[in-house]
Length: 410
Image 1 (cartoon, rainbow, N blue to C red):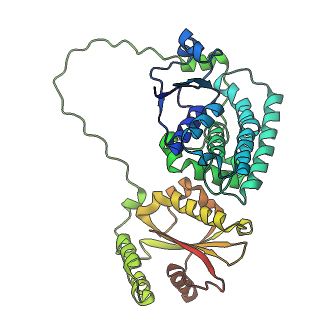
Image 2: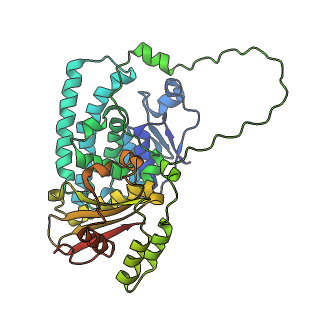
Image 3: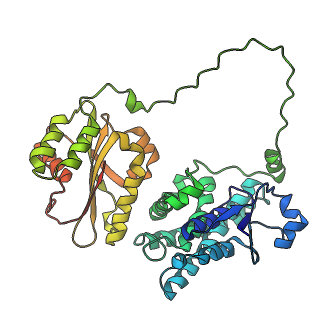
């Protein structure tokens, strides 16, 4: 018998089970035709969970309810690495699972439930939950300032549970104006939801723009009730018409710019294929190709270098930025340098963008952009041009300091 998960979807509690299953290599099937309020009240379901709540996992050996218990069970079936590599790691994983449940999820749920019509809004309770959530996120933010993951150097069950508990907050209740006070929590959340095993289950995640209004139970029920389709009067059959052609997909504004003499892919090939005499071949070739009417060059400097106290965390931070910049691959080339032999490490970058300004869709979609100071390169200034050359070729020392690493976006 396969593992069958009974629940409505989409649900953060279902997500945590399915993500753990992806990491563990365990197959979990969703029960077909599940209807909340109907299926979970049936005698068959109540044999699996007598209080009728979801999710419930049906296994060959019996049923398990409570989402964290189900997630632990799935994680232990094959791959114990989700619990770390030692007894203390195991304890820390369990510690953070409890934290994410008792210090994060419960407060988000308190504020969100009345907005979904589950329960009555009570202003003092919401104010208390809001204050408690800010305190918890503040503590989490301090911890994540020097840690990429909650336990060790890779994803554990603690990260899966916490990220799924944060998911409802980011997507329904906590707009950017709220979460910007916790930049390390933001970085952590977006890093995790963009991991392949997370993305496969959750898909694309978009942060809410505003706090939704409170709904009464009656309004929630009315919104959930399917509306009957209006009865259509029969009309005389018209002569068959030609099928309407599908509307063309809206073009990126950058595709509508006048043609440029610089072909970005040619520069990327030259950069990649030049193995010797880099200055004489690649750098000279770059300036021969560069079109200031069709492209622009930008320096960027990380605003919070004093926080870069752990080398691998800093490198992961830069790697996550480049991953999220993938939306601009057709229109950009970048170099990111991590500088220094001892902490705190400096992060500096050079970016080539199509157009005379940083593309607006990059500013809108890639939240990392606001973590950097951006300055347009003045190509009439020979000192700035030489700095561009040094960044393209990963010159070391760079501005008097060693390079910890250099990453290329192409």
